[in-house]
Image: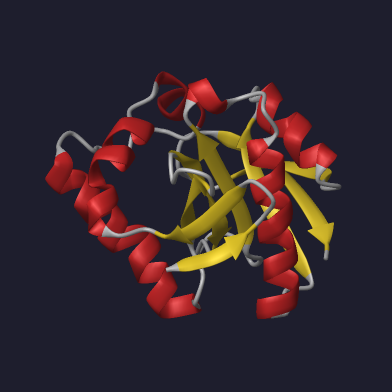
Length: 168
């Protein structure tokens, strides 16, 4: 189910058919370094990740992480979407892309659409983002989106993170 489209991208809800893509993405060195090990060691673990993460969030909140793909040929590039974490009072935006698609503006294009979707469709007046302290690429993207650094905090899930926020 396609949720959003941009000039080059389509963002859709994840399905169990995306298990191989999720398996690859969450085991990328960049994911492991900046997001953390989700314990996805096989395709069944990937389906559990989809079921207990994005699908559960779709059911509970109507939003979640979406698969980002090219409109032209449906090539899967990464994930981008809205997340409601128990540890944060606000909804946050999350994104991760396969390294071969970095530097082409896809993350900015997807994240811009997700921020607008959160404001228009869900009435979110404030959206936040968290990133590891040294993830320069994500920090640069968040700032390009208009998000501002607010503070360093510890969510109790693997060390301190930077919190960014924006009024939508």
